[in-house]
Image 1 (spheres, rainbow, N blue to C red):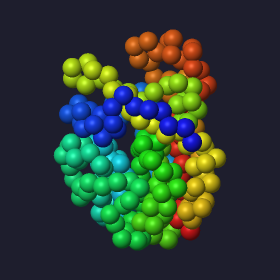
Image 2 (image 1 turned 90 degrees about the horizontal axis):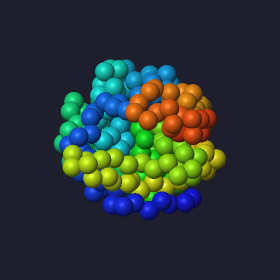
Image 3 (image 1 turned 60 degrees about the vertical axis):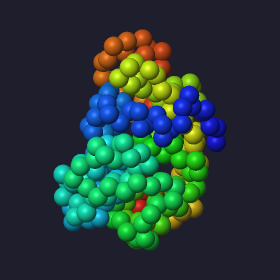
Image 4 (image 1 turned 30 degrees about the horizontal axis):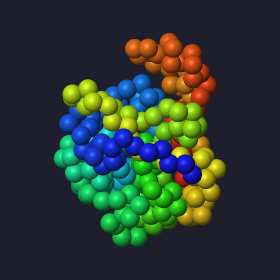
Length: 225
Protein backbone atom coordinates (compact mmCIF):
# COMPACT_ATOMS: atom_id res chain seq x y z
CA UNK A 1 0.00 0.00 0.00
CA UNK A 2 1.20 3.52 -0.85
CA UNK A 3 -0.29 6.64 0.73
CA UNK A 4 -0.44 9.88 -1.24
CA UNK A 5 -0.16 12.82 1.14
CA UNK A 6 -2.95 15.41 0.97
CA UNK A 7 -2.71 19.17 0.90
CA UNK A 8 -5.33 19.20 3.67
CA UNK A 9 -6.85 16.55 5.92
CA UNK A 10 -9.56 14.52 4.27
CA UNK A 11 -12.15 15.57 6.85
CA UNK A 12 -11.34 19.25 6.42
CA UNK A 13 -11.56 18.91 2.65
CA UNK A 14 -14.97 17.21 2.75
CA UNK A 15 -16.32 19.71 5.26
CA UNK A 16 -15.29 22.50 2.89
CA UNK A 17 -16.68 20.63 -0.12
CA UNK A 18 -20.08 19.87 1.45
CA UNK A 19 -21.89 23.14 0.56
CA UNK A 20 -21.28 22.61 -3.16
CA UNK A 21 -21.31 18.78 -3.24
CA UNK A 22 -24.48 17.80 -5.10
CA UNK A 23 -26.30 14.65 -3.82
CA UNK A 24 -26.34 13.26 -7.38
CA UNK A 25 -23.70 12.04 -9.83
CA UNK A 26 -22.35 15.40 -10.95
CA UNK A 27 -19.40 14.69 -13.26
CA UNK A 28 -18.54 12.23 -16.07
CA UNK A 29 -16.64 9.86 -13.78
CA UNK A 30 -19.46 9.70 -11.22
CA UNK A 31 -22.11 9.24 -13.90
CA UNK A 32 -20.20 6.30 -15.43
CA UNK A 33 -19.57 4.88 -11.95
CA UNK A 34 -23.21 5.14 -10.93
CA UNK A 35 -24.44 3.55 -14.17
CA UNK A 36 -22.14 0.57 -13.58
CA UNK A 37 -23.13 0.33 -9.90
CA UNK A 38 -26.82 0.24 -10.83
CA UNK A 39 -26.14 -2.58 -13.31
CA UNK A 40 -24.83 -4.61 -10.34
CA UNK A 41 -27.43 -3.29 -7.87
CA UNK A 42 -28.48 -5.98 -5.36
CA UNK A 43 -32.10 -6.69 -4.39
CA UNK A 44 -33.00 -4.05 -1.82
CA UNK A 45 -36.81 -4.08 -1.50
CA UNK A 46 -37.76 -4.68 2.12
CA UNK A 47 -34.13 -4.92 3.23
CA UNK A 48 -31.95 -3.01 5.69
CA UNK A 49 -29.37 -0.96 3.80
CA UNK A 50 -26.28 1.08 4.66
CA UNK A 51 -24.79 3.85 2.54
CA UNK A 52 -21.23 3.68 3.84
CA UNK A 53 -19.26 6.96 3.64
CA UNK A 54 -22.40 8.49 2.21
CA UNK A 55 -21.26 12.05 1.52
CA UNK A 56 -24.43 14.00 0.77
CA UNK A 57 -26.45 10.80 0.39
CA UNK A 58 -26.32 9.95 -3.30
CA UNK A 59 -26.63 6.22 -2.74
CA UNK A 60 -28.88 6.59 0.30
CA UNK A 61 -31.38 8.26 -2.02
CA UNK A 62 -31.10 5.45 -4.57
CA UNK A 63 -31.52 2.83 -1.84
CA UNK A 64 -34.70 4.54 -0.66
CA UNK A 65 -35.98 4.74 -4.24
CA UNK A 66 -35.36 1.00 -4.63
CA UNK A 67 -37.70 0.32 -1.70
CA UNK A 68 -35.21 -0.58 1.05
CA UNK A 69 -37.11 -1.03 4.32
CA UNK A 70 -34.53 0.99 6.29
CA UNK A 71 -31.72 3.18 4.99
CA UNK A 72 -28.85 4.32 7.19
CA UNK A 73 -26.33 6.87 5.93
CA UNK A 74 -22.94 7.02 7.66
CA UNK A 75 -20.17 9.55 7.15
CA UNK A 76 -17.42 11.14 9.22
CA UNK A 77 -18.25 14.65 7.98
CA UNK A 78 -21.03 16.42 9.86
CA UNK A 79 -21.21 19.01 7.08
CA UNK A 80 -21.89 16.27 4.52
CA UNK A 81 -24.46 14.54 6.75
CA UNK A 82 -26.42 17.77 7.17
CA UNK A 83 -27.22 17.58 3.45
CA UNK A 84 -28.51 13.99 3.57
CA UNK A 85 -32.29 13.54 3.60
CA UNK A 86 -34.72 10.64 3.79
CA UNK A 87 -32.57 8.28 5.86
CA UNK A 88 -31.16 7.76 9.33
CA UNK A 89 -27.95 9.80 9.58
CA UNK A 90 -25.02 8.53 11.66
CA UNK A 91 -21.63 10.17 12.13
CA UNK A 92 -18.83 7.65 12.46
CA UNK A 93 -15.71 5.99 11.10
CA UNK A 94 -16.02 3.48 8.29
CA UNK A 95 -13.32 1.32 9.91
CA UNK A 96 -15.05 1.25 13.32
CA UNK A 97 -18.75 1.09 12.56
CA UNK A 98 -21.16 1.96 15.41
CA UNK A 99 -23.57 -0.88 14.58
CA UNK A 100 -24.30 -4.33 15.98
CA UNK A 101 -23.31 -7.50 14.18
CA UNK A 102 -25.51 -8.44 11.16
CA UNK A 103 -27.32 -5.08 11.21
CA UNK A 104 -27.64 -4.81 7.41
CA UNK A 105 -28.68 -6.88 4.40
CA UNK A 106 -27.04 -4.53 1.88
CA UNK A 107 -23.98 -2.27 2.17
CA UNK A 108 -23.26 0.18 -0.64
CA UNK A 109 -20.21 2.45 -0.70
CA UNK A 110 -19.35 4.85 -3.49
CA UNK A 111 -15.80 6.09 -4.17
CA UNK A 112 -14.69 5.96 -0.54
CA UNK A 113 -12.51 2.94 0.21
CA UNK A 114 -9.31 4.79 -0.64
CA UNK A 115 -9.94 7.10 2.31
CA UNK A 116 -9.70 4.18 4.76
CA UNK A 117 -6.52 3.97 6.80
CA UNK A 118 -6.76 0.17 6.88
CA UNK A 119 -8.15 -2.03 4.11
CA UNK A 120 -8.35 -5.01 6.47
CA UNK A 121 -10.34 -3.10 9.09
CA UNK A 122 -12.69 -1.71 6.43
CA UNK A 123 -13.49 -5.15 5.03
CA UNK A 124 -13.81 -6.81 8.43
CA UNK A 125 -16.18 -4.11 9.68
CA UNK A 126 -18.35 -4.38 6.58
CA UNK A 127 -18.46 -8.15 7.03
CA UNK A 128 -19.28 -7.82 10.73
CA UNK A 129 -22.33 -5.59 10.18
CA UNK A 130 -23.55 -7.63 7.18
CA UNK A 131 -25.98 -10.48 7.73
CA UNK A 132 -25.37 -13.94 6.28
CA UNK A 133 -26.21 -13.76 2.58
CA UNK A 134 -25.94 -9.97 2.61
CA UNK A 135 -24.41 -8.04 -0.29
CA UNK A 136 -21.55 -5.53 -0.41
CA UNK A 137 -21.35 -3.32 -3.49
CA UNK A 138 -18.60 -0.72 -3.59
CA UNK A 139 -16.69 1.44 -6.03
CA UNK A 140 -13.44 3.33 -5.68
CA UNK A 141 -10.90 5.34 -7.59
CA UNK A 142 -8.81 2.66 -9.33
CA UNK A 143 -5.34 2.04 -7.85
CA UNK A 144 -3.80 2.18 -11.34
CA UNK A 145 -5.20 5.68 -11.86
CA UNK A 146 -3.79 6.83 -8.53
CA UNK A 147 -0.44 5.22 -9.30
CA UNK A 148 -0.36 6.98 -12.68
CA UNK A 149 -0.57 10.31 -10.87
CA UNK A 150 -4.24 11.20 -11.23
CA UNK A 151 -5.49 12.82 -8.03
CA UNK A 152 -8.81 13.24 -6.27
CA UNK A 153 -9.31 16.98 -5.94
CA UNK A 154 -11.95 19.68 -6.08
CA UNK A 155 -12.35 23.46 -6.05
CA UNK A 156 -14.45 25.25 -3.47
CA UNK A 157 -16.65 28.28 -4.06
CA UNK A 158 -13.55 30.50 -3.91
CA UNK A 159 -11.74 28.41 -6.54
CA UNK A 160 -9.29 27.03 -3.98
CA UNK A 161 -8.07 23.54 -4.86
CA UNK A 162 -8.11 20.73 -2.31
CA UNK A 163 -6.38 17.41 -2.91
CA UNK A 164 -7.83 14.47 -1.03
CA UNK A 165 -5.74 11.83 0.70
CA UNK A 166 -5.97 8.50 -1.10
CA UNK A 167 -4.48 5.15 -0.09
CA UNK A 168 -3.61 2.84 -2.97
CA UNK A 169 -4.95 -0.65 -2.34
CA UNK A 170 -4.13 -2.94 -5.26
CA UNK A 171 -6.97 -4.98 -6.71
CA UNK A 172 -5.49 -8.27 -5.52
CA UNK A 173 -5.16 -6.80 -2.01
CA UNK A 174 -8.82 -5.79 -2.01
CA UNK A 175 -9.99 -9.21 -3.17
CA UNK A 176 -7.77 -10.97 -0.64
CA UNK A 177 -9.02 -8.74 2.18
CA UNK A 178 -12.61 -9.42 1.18
CA UNK A 179 -12.02 -13.17 1.22
CA UNK A 180 -10.26 -13.03 4.59
CA UNK A 181 -13.25 -11.16 6.04
CA UNK A 182 -15.70 -13.82 4.82
CA UNK A 183 -16.91 -11.95 1.75
CA UNK A 184 -17.14 -14.00 -1.46
CA UNK A 185 -16.42 -11.78 -4.47
CA UNK A 186 -19.06 -12.22 -7.18
CA UNK A 187 -18.07 -9.56 -9.69
CA UNK A 188 -15.22 -7.15 -10.43
CA UNK A 189 -15.51 -4.37 -13.00
CA UNK A 190 -13.02 -1.78 -14.19
CA UNK A 191 -14.13 1.44 -15.89
CA UNK A 192 -11.50 2.69 -18.31
CA UNK A 193 -10.68 6.11 -19.69
CA UNK A 194 -12.17 6.58 -23.14
CA UNK A 195 -14.07 3.29 -22.95
CA UNK A 196 -16.61 3.10 -20.13
CA UNK A 197 -15.74 6.66 -19.07
CA UNK A 198 -16.12 8.62 -22.30
CA UNK A 199 -18.53 11.52 -21.71
CA UNK A 200 -17.20 14.79 -23.22
CA UNK A 201 -16.15 17.63 -20.92
CA UNK A 202 -13.93 20.70 -21.17
CA UNK A 203 -10.49 19.43 -22.18
CA UNK A 204 -11.71 15.84 -22.52
CA UNK A 205 -10.13 15.24 -25.93
CA UNK A 206 -6.63 15.67 -24.53
CA UNK A 207 -7.50 13.75 -21.37
CA UNK A 208 -8.92 10.77 -23.24
CA UNK A 209 -6.02 10.77 -25.70
CA UNK A 210 -3.38 10.82 -22.97
CA UNK A 211 -4.95 8.29 -20.63
CA UNK A 212 -6.88 6.06 -23.02
CA UNK A 213 -7.48 2.61 -21.56
CA UNK A 214 -6.29 3.48 -18.05
CA UNK A 215 -8.57 1.92 -15.41
CA UNK A 216 -10.20 4.84 -13.61
CA UNK A 217 -12.81 3.21 -11.35
CA UNK A 218 -12.97 -0.21 -9.70
CA UNK A 219 -16.31 -1.80 -8.73
CA UNK A 220 -16.66 -4.92 -6.61
CA UNK A 221 -19.72 -6.89 -5.57
CA UNK A 222 -19.40 -9.53 -2.83
CA UNK A 223 -21.63 -11.80 -0.78
CA UNK A 224 -21.33 -12.39 2.98
CA UNK A 225 -20.84 -16.12 3.52
